[in-house]
Length: 144
Image 1 (tube, helix red, strand yellow):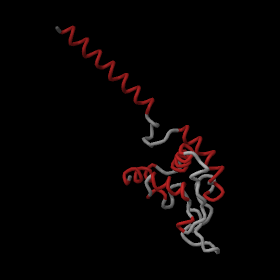
Image 2: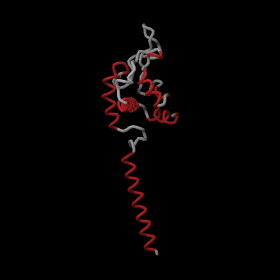
Image 3: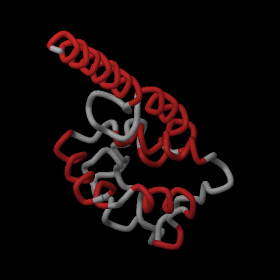
Image 4: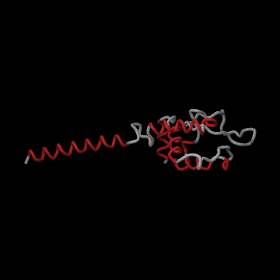
């Protein structure tokens, strides 16, 4: 009877350990963020090709005060690196902004709904969120 219980316990531990390892390989990454390193890598090329000319190559923005309208009356692209307001918005709203652009809100960002695939849009978000400090990312995650 004791041998049977020991074998059952050992089998359970092996199964739990295997499940834990399996879950680790399926999780997005060790930082607890929703994206993984391959999405960030894809996002880097998507962002540089489509977003960097206005938001900066590292999502840092290109103007000192993104809240002040430009001479043409339009608002400049804000930084997306966690130093502006992007972290206040859930992923669905970030996707909506990418799809619809910023023109309806007084900006100049064109819509990307038909230019980028859903995977490319998510990768771009992963890329700029990769610059967010953990404190900002955690605040975003808790809000959403």
